[in-house]
Length: 102
Image (cartoon, rainbow, N blue to C red; front, side):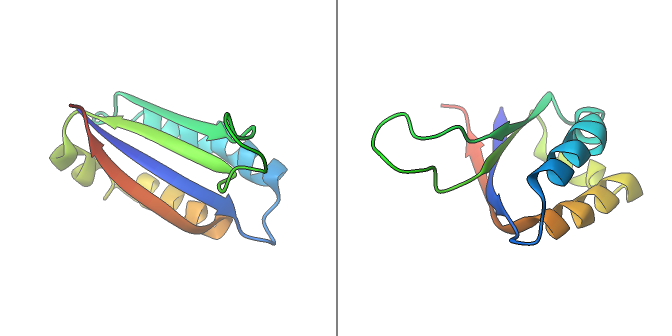
């Protein structure tokens, strides 16, 4: 099983309320509806578990993907490409990390 982890902050001009509404109403249903995705979550950082200060990232996305080839094909759909373009309007230099279960 592969998991894609996306770490990001919002662009200064992006509203957390607008981003979270879009994520709940559009992004989550579209990505969770892809046949290649087991589960997609968007998490808001609440703080650090250990240490002081704030989290370096405001949001974390977790996408469980059993088949990366199928995921790549699903991402080429017009609906997924539209969602990715909208995400880029909100996210400031997101970091996409591909992980594998051990």
